[in-house]
Image 1 (cartoon, rainbow, N blue to C red):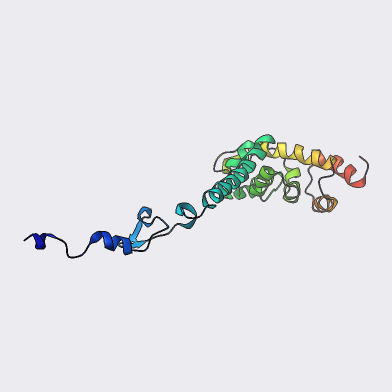
Image 2: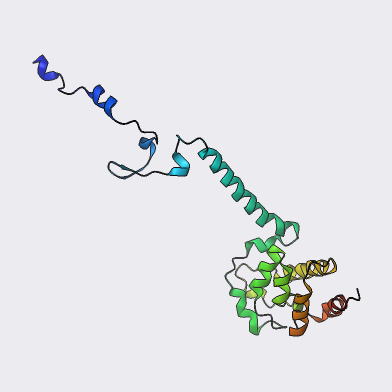
Length: 192
């Protein structure tokens, strides 16, 4: 009877013969019974640099996100970070007093302080009528946003940060509003 109670195979010997796992398989979620999924850059414990790579990647993501959020806030147009870029404001074409076609382009250009994009899409033509606001999904104060970017663009113009060919194109296409035409023309002709 005593021989029947003893297992025929020594379990400890079997465990010792199994190959050692260096990826902590038991901590991985099961995909199917007996099959483990490996998550190389999150759960490998046998690679020394993995944790540091994760930290470095997260630091890079945080820095990039911080830059995308901080720049508009520092420029006084923080609300542009909420723009969904859903292009709902494109419906304002018939309602815009000066015929600006792409208000979403102006908003994005304002968020990233892209003067060339702002000018090419008629940003210096905006008179701040507010007809575009009802079309904005989030009801952003677009006249305020565009006015601030117009001021920033004029400052950039005085600091020669705007290429002359962009101004030439804008003058040719009538993309400069009455409020700025004299200043821009004088700058273009080298009078200021």
